Length: 222
Image (cartoon, rainbow, N blue to C red; front, top):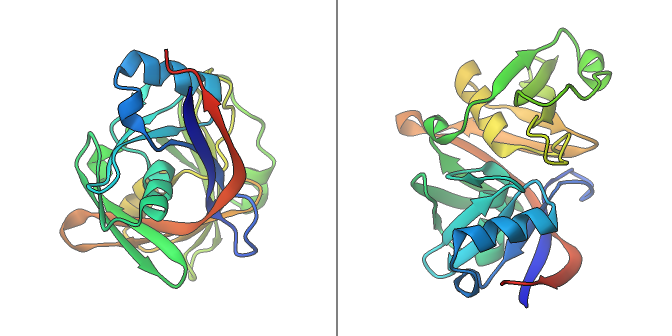
């Protein structure tokens, strides 16, 4: 039996919401990718992260159906939990910093898997959207206040794996920040908040609040 815990990543200013993340702290107990994929599928979170080396910040990320070289909310959640100043992912080394109760990661837009960034004319249009059919990963967004850099967004992974809508998606916010070339405050899902910024050398920072979801458990590892 392999233990796991659950975090809420990118909580709103009131501490609520955030995207749930499954964390298997003892990734060494599940060395095979096939077993990790099965556990991620059984847990059913949009992403589950396996910690391979807590001191070096080595992590491995899975959705219910596939392995990801990089993803935003697993990196932010793992950085908060492990207290490290960097993470090592399959895509590369992710920088970490903490400020004013926020955990921020720095990564390259090229690491993000393909996403369709679809702009709408108003926040109300985004909020009224129905979940689209599977087949395309869509990040629907609109300006709340363009001058202030505030955005309303929703994310539809389109994988057909039971996750019809992601509550908060750091990688998609990172891509949008790179495209727009400016810092953003993103209100996503039911009440999550992501803050982004540009970094030297073409990297982008994304961060937010993290809190334990106050539930843990175990799952078979073989």
